[in-house]
Length: 312
Image (cartoon, rainbow, N blue to C red; front, side):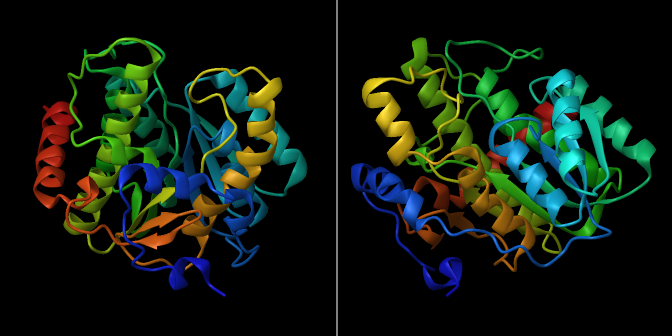
């Protein structure tokens, strides 16, 4: 049974039920990605492919035969990830330094990709941060917006302009169902503390959905989709104590990184519906009126804003 096709048109719920449904029995409800088709001859790029679910996505693509570019901010951990995956597979792997929060670093990463002389056929926009405190990027933008939303826009659009993406490339944009908490995505959001950082993250994840929708609309030959990978036991929201209730939550409720990579891998390797939103437990979601992700006018406005910030 195809989980993602059979659960099509699942409506968005009111906030508490929507978020609860995303985590309830998610370990049992998250399908595993098939081992086929094999990806020999394909070039894949994974942002943040050095750690967390990004590492597991990189490994999963390499296990299926893809040549994988690990694009990451931390060169040391990226090289370590490359070595680990190379020891387990026969795949060819590369490391490209990439700090998505800095547009100059994005441009340098595009230069490095251009020197390789091959087009990317699978791009997984995985990297993301959940701020613990308010901070600004090198260009002066709120850090979650700059990294999660603007940086990926600059990377994908720059790759398109330079001819570094296959004309029918698969673009998988990771988001989070937590987006449903917010209605806006802007570069100048001000907040305090971890709770404010959670809102900044939510806004950036809404921005990812709007970006993906506009990317598909403006480039219909691409295969674009968004994916909620699950609620995962990683350090994205800051380190957690591995004792007591938090230990129980991590072990019994949250997905580990290998489990969390399954839905992104499914979206990167299996047949998809262009422009769709795939959810690890709810299936393929159609956003009803009133869901912030369904606001086409805000999606277009964000795209224009991203263009101005990235390419002015």
